[in-house]
Image (cartoon, rainbow, N blue to C red; front, side, top):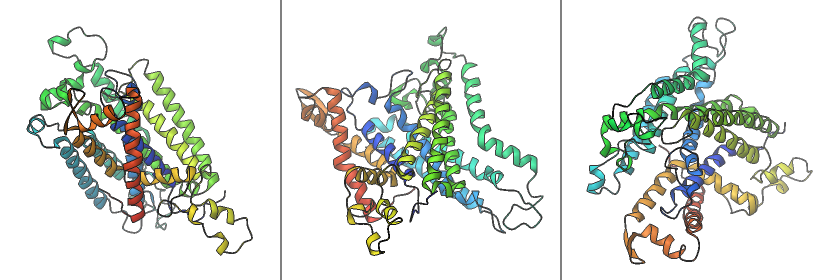
Length: 456
């Protein structure tokens, strides 16, 4: 296996995050009323492109948990890993994520919004899931460390400190028991529940408005605080029980990256791990589709079949991006350096030329430039999510009158400038692409060029 020269981080991780950020911007920038159905969430059950964004963010958050707390998978020193520090940091980040989510829910602070303020949402769910999965990782990661071969073994877990049975249970729960428990609890609770509401009497099958999710959300904070005043909230309490599975899947993949860092740092190793991930993702996808014949696939209730299908798609997607960026199938900043390994030229001849510089250098052309852009978007995923929400919300609340009707500045830009001479779905997509290419991409490149990474 040929090691990638000068590799300090796996570009595939950033590039995959960048793909999801770009997808989030494209979906979030669609214009309601004229957007293609595939770019919007279905009213009932089903799966569209828009339904891949949220589970994708949960997946990359799980990978980030494993990478950011990789010290928990390294052999501890005499004092062991400082788990208390990790727990404090996790709680602080979760609270900050929730606070940002509440800010976005309240923005632009109009009375009618504050009166019906939602207490849950995308970032709120990210905060809860982050807290749960991080605590799972902090409390169970020790079970993956090698036990001491002999008393006083250097760097090993002290003999007698961890019972063998406890190690097995913690490892089993971390690697498989946790998602099985969450999925089982959801299935038992959902299908054993019978709504006491008269309008739900005799309603067959799994109906969101008559589900356990609707009953819990309505009784905890009331219909007026649900999304659009509906019977249930798509980011409600019960469905979060299954949403953690998507983050857990990212955690397991992230742990594999941390534990096999040498393999992920070589072209041959990357190709081998990517092939394995594609196989695993395909199995998850097929299992989710099969389960969907019994339990409908739907984001609103975040059904187990939906979780399995989206986990499979994310694993396969990450493997393909990893294969492209770190498996030598996509032009990278290391292309010129790699060529120098087999040449007999001088060191000066092997310096990367300006057109081969990475995201922080000169702009490259072709596929390499596209790769740099994805990496740049992936360096600040939370920032671009919040920014895109603020941009769309702000422009959507600025009133404009056009074509004899009242609208907003956001819809006017697409309907007057584009939809007047092209089909509505195409106009909505072009509008979203223009925002991505002319606003978000240059900003992402600027942030990376300046070395600004906005973290929570």
